Length: 442
Ligand SMILES: NC(=O)c1ccc[n+]([C@@H]2O[C@H](COP(=O)([O-])OP(=O)(O)OC[C@H]3O[C@@H](n4cnc5c(N)ncnc54)[C@H](O)[C@@H]3O)[C@@H](O)[C@H]2O)c1
Image 1 (cartoon, rainbow, N blue to C red):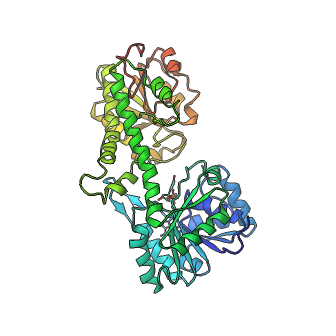
Image 2 (cartoon, protein in one colour; image 1 turned 180 degrees about the vertical axis):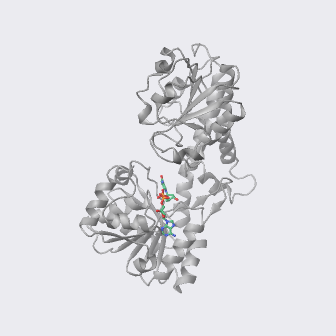
Image 3 (cartoon, helix red, strand yellow; image 1 turned 90 degrees about the vertical axis):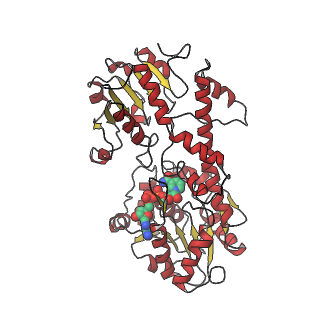
């Protein structure tokens, strides 16, 4: 469907999510003006080049949209907004190591949008937010800077971005888009907008708060589910249960969807968004969410104790960590379990080596390990143990037999073929699979 009536559209924040969105809107015939703080990002896009290379289809989509004159970029957000009918804001909300929220980018983007806001605009936030933020923090900021009134002069809605980096265009076709406004006209207008630019279903919910909460509920569900998987796996490990088989069998019942046990949960989303809920929860509310977070944060320690036991101590051992990213096939270190894993290994006296083909040596300097260029080079180093943190595609053909003297592999993601490890003569362990279980590694 073409959407000539809802155009131009300003997309504020041209990052991993904002740029694909801008390209998607342009592909539907809208005139899109993307806004970003970074001049180099703007220049690259105006030259038809996506500055993000990991997203399948993005480079072609940007080149095509720019060539057709449908996508332009600017650092001048107020001017872009002044010329736009719809404004989509997708700048990050930063979260510190203590999980405290830093609204700096979002507030700055909101003020810049307010300076260009005019009667009849529709403003939609897509950045994941604590419940109530659109109405109580951002709406008043837009009003006070613009002199306009939310609801009366401009419409305001929230629509969470649920895409999975790396397969965004695929998800844009599949994942229903959730929309909730600060009032009915805002919801209705946002609904019409997304229906004109997405092929997926668009679902209206009662209000902005419901839409904000939906995203936090879905991500928190996954965190708590992983915590449950971890606790079940630990229970099972001392009872002669093959936990991998047990979960697979349990999940053959359609109502069961037990996730995978692991060394921990990383990334910008899953370990962070539960704190958006906990931040304003009263005593006694959400205790399951709080416990789940603590369980997942403690798993690196649990896994490394297993490793320590099987090796009879870690002091002086050479341990290779495979993958620094928080999960496979992404280049992202945010809240990655690599940090506690490497820290705990050092504290136990191990020598830590690290390979991650997604990063340069410089980019990995934030991790205190000996950076090795690739698995071939690592195999010559004589490592005692391997800890799999992120099982990138580049590792999947790995021949464990090349690691002479390798004693054990700790599968931190529970995804490896255990038999391929055991065939090399090394032991295989994972959360819930320890050397003590019958039939497990010798
Ligand atoms: N990355 C993901 O996997 C993912 C998935 C689902 C939802 N989200 C949501 O999307 C948000 C953005 O994530 P991302 O991965 O695209 O971030 P990102 O860091 O890749 O990109 C953000 C962009 O916003 C720009 N920016 C920052 N402040 C700005 C301002 N004041 N004005 C204009 N531009 C500004 C930055 O320069 C950057 O280019 C997240 O906070 C999250 O809520 C992300």
